Amino acid sequence: MPSPEDRLNKRTGKAEALLKLQRFCAYQDRCHSEVRSKLLELGVYGDDLEEVMVALIEEDFLNEERFARSYARGKFRIKQWGRVRIRQELKRRQISEYCIKAAFSEIDETEYWDTLRKLLSKQQSMLRGGDNRTRRDKLFRHALQKGYESELILEVLETT
Image (cartoon, rainbow, N blue to C red; front, side, top):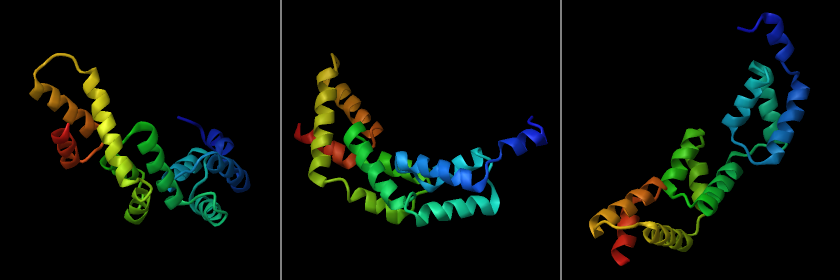
């Protein structure tokens, strides 16, 4: 357990913390919970923490809607995640429902369907052996794990 002196030495001044967090947020979009955790890690608590958070928001280093939009866009395009998985991850980061809805506006419906089709097609080409039912179940589970809605998965599987 750290001694009181160690804790005092670990504490970062408010101005220093603000500079560190400005760099932290400038590198990539961050959500409020990530920034709050980082401040606690730096030993900034209470009113100082809140003042740094307000300063970051006022200076537009921290913007929850912008974070949600870029997060959804990135996870969909790079990892081919579906809306269910993206929603779960945003909720885990305590993002508001308003920001989650805004984030989903970044995902084009046609592109969403095409990505699901490609994902299932690629997975199907990797499956070996087994009967049609087993292969279909594996495809369904794979798409479900990626976060796609079960109704959409079934619809795509019906057409292929």
